[in-house]
Image 1 (cartoon, rainbow, N blue to C red):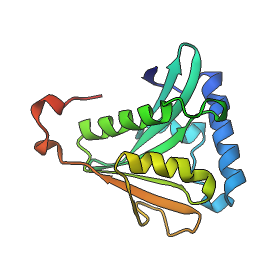
Image 2: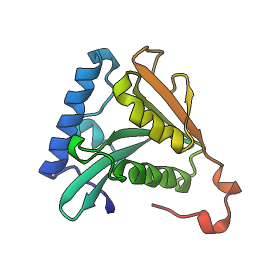
Image 3: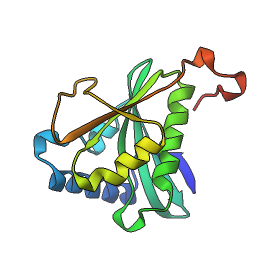
Image 4: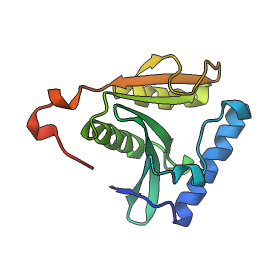
Length: 165
């Protein structure tokens, strides 16, 4: 599996993001859908990655810099037909490593609250995320689950763990 920064130009990623947005709108009311479209994912404060096995797209994920010490996980998605390949876990680990390398002290995310999101909840919890309240511009919403992972400040890392993305 190869994880790479993606410029969002390939048709496969367009199709995956369309699947993602369509699914999010099926699972919740429009005001509770916080998934980003292609244009919003191209913002300079967002880094977007894809995971590939040869020419097969296994998934995607993004990291939004909210401020120099706080990032947000965005657009985590694996194609419905390719779930349980380990791509989501690998992408999340890559995003967490990047957040640490950037010196973030906290990494947060918003995901859905209905049963269809239980696998995502388990994935995030397995990485150490805990449930919290809204952060950034989010507000309390019965359709949302907010989670945060506390990251040690870069000054507390051993020198071998410090790297850039």
